[in-house]
Structures are given as C-alpha cells and as structure tokens.
Image (cartoon, rainbow, N blue to C red):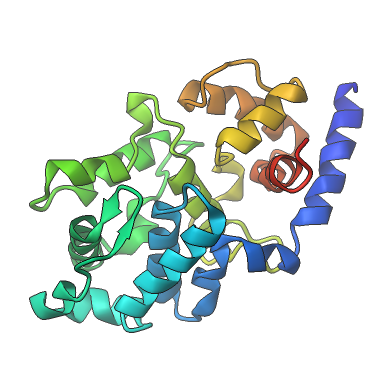
Length: 253
C-alpha cells in the first residue's frame, strides 16, 4: 500500500470502530457512567491506571473501584476519612493494590485542592506534545508522602516510557469528534497534541503496516508513530488509535 491507500484504509477502520458500540467492550465505559466533570476525570483516570491485561477484568475492577468510592468519585476524593479508605483493603488488580489505591485518592485530593485539578496539571503549556506535561504531572502526583512501590503506576516519558495508559486517559478527556466515544471535556487542551496509546496490539499492527520500525514500545517508538499519524490528520492524529487497536484486537491483523 502507498501512503494514500494506507491513510484511506485506516480512515475506514476509524469509522468502523470509533462509534458508540465500541464503548460496551472498553474501559472507557467507566467515565461514561458520570455527567459531572470531576467525576468523569477521576473515574477515567482510575480506570486508565489499571488498564492492562484482560479487558473484562479491567472493566470489572474499575467498576469495583467506582463502587468503593460510593459511585461519587469527586465527593469521595475531597471528603473521605481514613475509615472510608479502610474499605479498600483486599482490593487488587494485578500489581495495583489497596495501598496504591488509597494513595491515589489522597494524591487526587491534593491535586484538586492545591493544583486546580487534573485538566490544569496535565496542560501542555507551550509544547505541542505531552512529554513534559506527563513528567511534571508525575512529580506533582508524588509530592505528598508515598510508598516507593506506588511510583511504578504512573509512567514517565523522560525515562523512556510510552506512557500508554496516561495517553489513553488524555485521549478520553481531550478528543471530541461528536461520535460519542471519547468524552472531550477538556476544552483547554488540543487534540492535535495527543499521542497514540501505544501497546502490544497497536504497536504490532503499526509495524505490519510499515508505519513503525522501532522494535520496543517506548517513547521513541511513539514519536516515530506520531510523525506519520500527524501527517494523516494533523488536527486529530490519535483517532487512528481506533484503527490500530481494532485491527489488532478485533481483526487479529
């Protein structure tokens, strides 16, 4: 396929997968449960944080997290007591456990109380990408007292991570293309700056299509992929995540 044919092929796949039917099998259904901005953000952030492994398990455990927050994430974050956090004991998703979950709630409270919330703290400022924004977000996220073990649950692009989960969360919050999948509630952000959430599926498909040559799924690979996707659509490059993911997961491309 030449570049034009490849773009047309991927555009077709975007249309196929970027529609409301996608929601029922994807963790994005968790933030869709809410209408209040802060509830959407917190539910989305927590669901994205544990979005690795079996998708049914991710959705089940994300739902459990929301239940533990009394189905009112922002109210819980801002007004919880130590007794409320004790109810998390026994929660686990792979390596993310109750202690990690408790810290995340405390850190989110700090972010909303002292840093104007998630939308402000993840702002790209003057950059045209999220590399520094994610790095700075991690610094602020762990500025309160924390266990060493919890650090691994927030990635850092400056250490080479492709930051798949936080890039997916950003896609959910920023993209607004009227199809009803991504929530698009962060009006101070720009879809043109988003990065494709690079995982095993999207990485393998991108390599098979010849738009990614780097072997590792790291930030350098993400940069390489971004360059091509931004040529295909400079205003909404990350829409192609639907095509790459759909081809990998649903079509076993």
